[in-house]
Length: 419
Image (cartoon, rainbow, N blue to C red; front, side, top):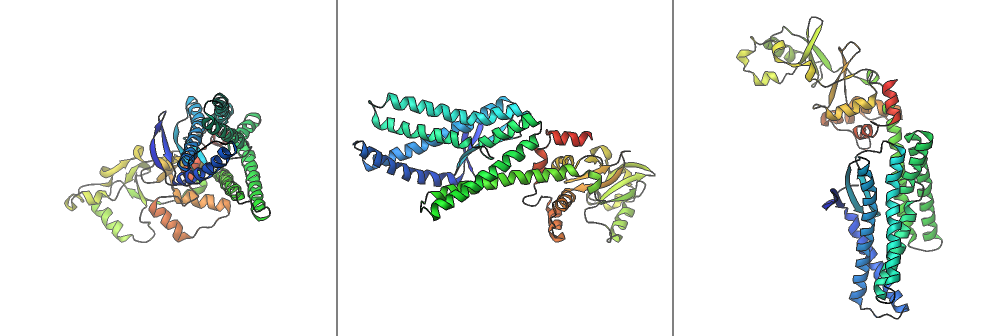
């Protein structure tokens, strides 16, 4: 969502405000003060201009307080199911609670999704009761409560629309997941519904603006565009997951390593490295063997730390990284496991081991990107991939580590491990 400011915590959850929130606060304050001016005039109630602005601003604050409680409803239920909530962010279209991972069961996901609208309906009922109680005693306060009752009712109903990223879409996903047994199928149905809703909103908004000359239709277009982006992101996530499930490490691995004899002294190794400037990548790993026995890895950086006088007396076997300290992965592992392991690997590379526990290759982020792009029919230029390799980062839109983290508990990923 971009840059946001952390302004505090609530129930241990960081509360953040996106810059776009300030824009909607200003616009909504102008809108509400104009509405209150007309309503108070119709009811023959006196109000000063500063008073109208205060009423408008107070309504905005209470509305976003309601949005915050809506998201807090999601968050508290998520915490009850053992899911960490990273933050709650207020932004242009309301608020969003960001969780660390998905629920393990469909029923838990259903409870988390339904909690937000339930809070909004409860708030609508509360403001309705307050409005009735204050109708004769404090008519202006009752008017504010009536407005907040309607807003919370609209918030609850709007969020129940059956398409991602709305709560209704999450409920659809959970229900399809529960009855079909596939979380993936739930996401497909809910994302498709979200796309349909978003396109309908954009088309309706354009109709209001171009045919009926209603400028507020632009908000509908903006909401539809946001929904279109969110639903498309979910479908793109599924496509990336498909590719990470499709491949095994042995299909993707490279061979960016060389063999060194354990008995070589460091002076000989230094001369060998100086000579062999062709056919050797600048970041190739050096695996040390004693005959047919693999011992570990030699790191050329050792030559920079030892005095030159010691090189003839020191052998490779005395200056190696033990095999147990080298991050590795089996060649039979699915690609999503490699993506997860690469997030923890210090050098963003893994040694690939065959069934006998011997090195058969290496794998890094570029190997993953190449495989996934090939599966998607995308061709990236080699200079760009070289830059990705040097930086050790994924290209924008291909954050495969994050994609893999969403797969750890899915039934599709578990079946790929067992097959």
